[in-house]
Length: 90
Image (cartoon, rainbow, N blue to C red):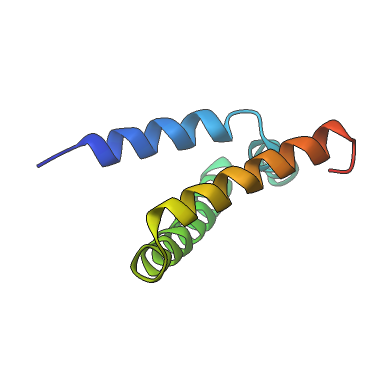
């Protein structure tokens, strides 16, 4: 079994999620409800659902659109978000 997709995705998401608004929301929920197990399960279920949606949409895009187009659109979206963040609009 090739573990490269697993390790790559795990590392990417781990680094992307550290310190972002999702982690801050989970910290807030854990402080509010004082039930770490239920907060953990809720956060895990939400991340699982969002990731499943991303995988399904990624597969649909991969079958319907050229890979280069997907890369250009994704790159452009990241650049646009970065510019908007720099401009203070996000």
